Image (cartoon, rainbow, N blue to C red):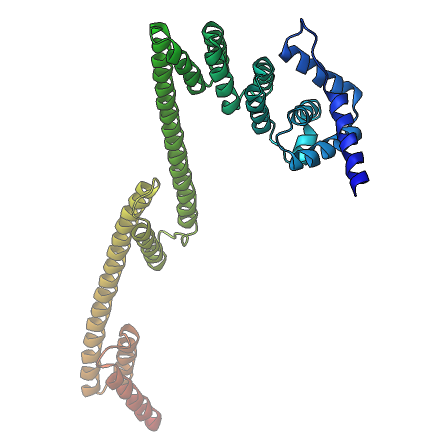
Length: 359
């Protein structure tokens, strides 16, 4: 067991040695770490990187405070990001932890160099940016800090994220409250954001209004088409047929009552009025015809009655042939509803019988 542990430790030490080296005297810590990262990306393939990552992660689980091994893991992760993803290692969190360990160990420049490197790779990580700003503030590099914050703010504005620029500008005011230009920039950015929000709200309201109006118009169009189809499907019209006029008039009344208002309603109402007038005209014509038929019936019955009376006179005079002809003519002139019809028919039968006997 001891031999195996020693071999694993020697393997991890070899990995650390392969990934890290001491910087030259004239080389900046940030530049040195970037060079180490680039060399690891070129010289270490994917499979070897995963093996190195597994060894370093296992080693750090036993000793999380080992600075060189943690530094080696971060250099490997920067060169091969999939290694950190595979072992669920956060580059930002572990990088900040290494910076704390380096600073506590008195290696402030290396911690500063690592934060510089991490800030370029993780520009959205506020924790890394805040740690770098705090370290620069403690080191008294206020001018460089202000320049960095201005650069970050400009980048946020160019990317269309004005609200992300405000914290960087506020960081400047923490160090120099006399910068009225910065306060004015913050105020302008907030006003701009408020204007953008208001513009977006107006655009959204307009879009919503357009959608609502379009939906309503579509619904109205569909309704109009459906009602027009119902209108076209009504019973056909025969102008001289009272039953056909009544059927279409009733159908139009039902259509108007069930749909209340639609664009084609005016045509339906106009047709309804025309149909009502046509119905009245047909009714008037039929009433006039009925009156004329009744007058003709009464006239014919009056003539039949006169003939009947003449026929009776002829019977009294013994002129049976004459009376038979008069009775027959009276029967032809009369209608079925004439009250004397059955009596006249009986008289005809009696006279015909009498004349046969006389023969």
